[in-house]
Each structure stands twice: as C-alpha cells, then as structure tokens.
Image 1 (cartoon, rainbow, N blue to C red):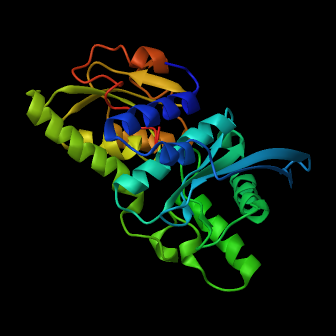
Image 2 (tube, one colour):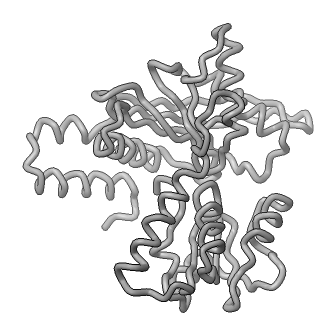
Length: 296
C-alpha cells in the first residue's frame, strides 16, 4: 500500500466500488475533486515581521449537499493529504445519510509556534482569503490544530464580511455562538462507545491497559473517558511525541499539563516514547487500535 494518503483513499474506493457493483461512471466521478484551491496570504507577526502562509481547500463532491468540514493548521500539510480527507468526508457523509458534500482545507503552519493573537489573525486571514465560503457553499469545520476558538474567530470574520449573523457558515464553533452542545466531545465519545463494545466482544478485562495515539480534540476526550471508566491508559502521544507509564497516566492532570504547555511531552512521572514506539508498546489494546487523530 502506498504511503501517499490519496493513493490509499482511491484504492479503498475502487475496492469498495467493486464489492458494491457500482456504476463505473459513478466511480469516475468520485475519483477526482470537483475543485482544488491553493492560495497564499500575508500576515504580520507579533514581532512586526510579515510572513506569507500557504493555504488550501479541496471540494470533492457536492452531489448530496454543500461542502463541509475540517480545517487543519499543521506544519507538514500536503495537498494530497487534504484530497484524501475530502474524499473520505464525502463517503462518510454519504454512508451516514448526511446531506452534505466532502471538503477539507487548512494552512501550512505549526500552531504551537504562534501566540494567541497570531493564531487569531491566522484564523481570520484564512477565512477572509478563502475563495468560496458560506452556509450554502462551503462550511469549514475544526480539525488538527484548530478548535472551537479558531472556528469562533472564523465565524466572526465571515459575519463581518457579509454584515449579518450566519452561524451555519462555520462548523464546530462554541455553543455560546450557536454551536451544537456536545459537538466538541462527540467524536471522542463515539470512539469510547465502540471501544467499550469491543472490550465486551473480545473478552478484555474491565481494567485493561490502553495506549492512545493522538491527544487533540478526539484523543484527549477518549483518554479522559477511558480513565473515568477504570481503564489504565499507559501511553498517549501527540504530534510532538509521546509519553509512557506502566503504572498508568493520570489523564486529568495530563490535560492540565497540556493546557499549560501545549504538549504531552515532559509530563512528570512518565518516560518519553516516539509515535512509532507507542504503536508497539506492551499494552492490552495498543495505540494502533486507539488511533484518535480526527478523520485520519
């Protein structure tokens, strides 16, 4: 299997289509994006320096409705990654019976290197320069490197542009600005429900040890629920690295550590592990089974 996520997505699409006996013309339509946007914008940093940021947005298919979802702020962002994710969002919406198309986008940036004010300016600049946007066209949501806060900034910027309130133009915003209550926790909670059923189906102990790859909007919620449920979380990781403790990690205290530092690394009482090592740790349920990066 290719390491390129787009090749993987297209391979899976063709295999599924063959099993389902789909019309070849439908597969041809689903195999290419409707449009791909690549753009840049300048932004003044806190230091006074002006930096140019590269941004993308992929519209895959809108046969079922307007384009929707994730916006990534990551330093290693690629167009093929976003194309694959836009295709997967199209399939997920279709399988789930959601009247929406698949979209993905983002900015090539490490948000951990930005101040709060720079992150706000970046979020607003992305929305301002996004070529197509709006409740009936394209609705950006949160993903890796973005959050309810970035989405609130994006919505505010869009509403300043159009001059009226349009909460449906941005997904994953806080409930205080017309967001859906429980939306931020929904994906992680869903993974936890599936995890609990798998534990019963496969006969694992109720206090089995677990490694979780990813500690963002999904992974942090999942790890917290695992901790509350009596499972022993022995390792977690994020884009900066991982941590391990055979005695189990205090997830609420780790969440406090991440709020202060932005990373799971250097959490007291743990030893460092790489993301690759985390997948091979001696845990009842390894990180390869609890991969909690959103939509990946």
